[in-house]
Length: 118
Image (cartoon, rainbow, N blue to C red; front, side, top):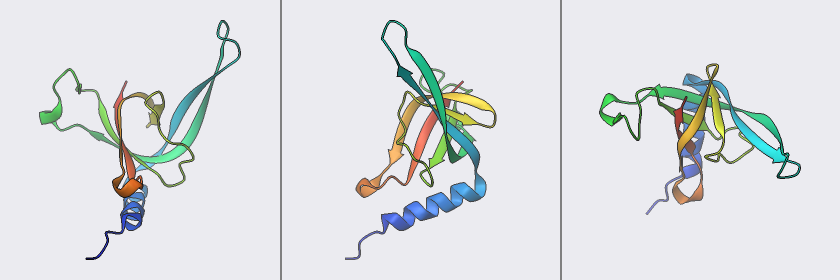
């Protein structure tokens, strides 16, 4: 039985997001210094992403709100692993990550699925 080529699926996802997506950034805040007076530094990591509206059937007003966005983030050129404490910058808007899921069959992250909230 032939093995599925997940690296090829990843390359396809990267190509499609690059073709139909736009540039954006993952914004990460890092604390430095003492706990009583921390200095917070924000760093933007460039990425390619696609921002979509949620289907009305999925919007329940609680877990998924009407203003939430479904964001697919490509792994191509991304130098960090996303975390729920990060923010996504897309189209001049900053979205907090409410839910974060990697599509990672066989341990290879094909792309990141983000539920973004303003």
